[in-house]
Image (cartoon, rainbow, N blue to C red):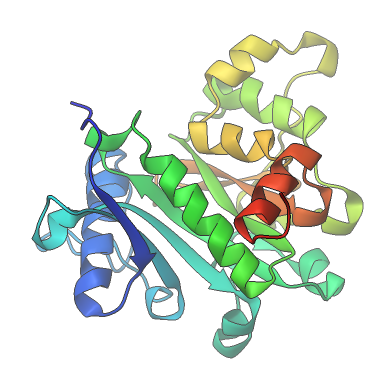
Length: 259
């Protein structure tokens, strides 16, 4: 069931109750739906959480007609570089070597745990979350956005076409090209460029990854096979200075910098 025209509010989590509501939604999507797990997942309370949560800003999409934990129907987890410096690392560094990004000296923002309640997929929910992300990027002067995005399951043969398409068509420039850590490194150049089928690749591509590609996003070198979370992850990157003129003007209009 898709909820028609819900009354949405968008804000950052303010307290423990907000964070718990976000973790409850993450459980329903990443654990109950997709079969993921993790050391700090609380199955009894139905919470998907980890040790990084206290450091992140949690962007919440709230349905004003719902109450309690059920009110949060979309989430995005955001970690600006200055907070990562206090923590000592980014979450993504558990899967990718981020040395190229750190070497740029530019303002970084890590994105993660993006999900929308199943009843709100196909509505304007993701559009509202992207609007909130755009506001956050502008407010914090972010220059490079990055984070892992996942393919469900760990069957590499099934994912060969979309992974190869990403490698051959959307590989990050050398100065931003992070690399998956060797312990779970999965090459993505599994199919030769002349044997690729764009339609098949796009059909197998998760919606979130396609959205980043439309904004001019690119991927790091190699995928990371995460058996605990039952996913194959790629590292998505977006340099705001290299966004297409159309999408850059969208961001600047939100800041009141363009007509």
